[in-house]
Image (cartoon, rainbow, N blue to C red):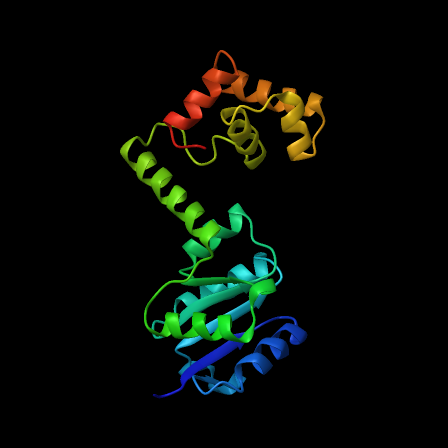
Length: 207
């Protein structure tokens, strides 16, 4: 079996060296030098988080038609998921889980044309796709930006039957903040109460 040519990109040289040293001994992978990156079948971008610099790099790599991009990332939030989708990233691995075997599994999967996501991110992606489909079917309906992440989290907890005090404890906000956030949602969306807000959010796929 021929070795898979891999280019490793990282602004932090420590991260680059760490991933390179994990991959180099493996017979499945050929880690390319920087002057060989045009030969890459797989590009691994190693970052702490998906910031502006990482986004620019991911967008640049998207134009390399022969290369599939994987992301090894320290912190990953909802906005990062949207960015990675937009940039055509085919695999995501959390840096805390990036041992040698997992790295090689991601590289080989990407080289086969497969996609790799942690289970929780796959669930989020499916939710995201469902919401996009609903927004296409009803472009005037509620969109992904209708609720903030904090509002979404709190409405989810309301839907699960938690009261104000329990929601405050779970989200590390004060009870006053919880009340204010939920009041803001019901007022902004012209809903009657929390139950109405939960029903609205569930009906439109916002939670």
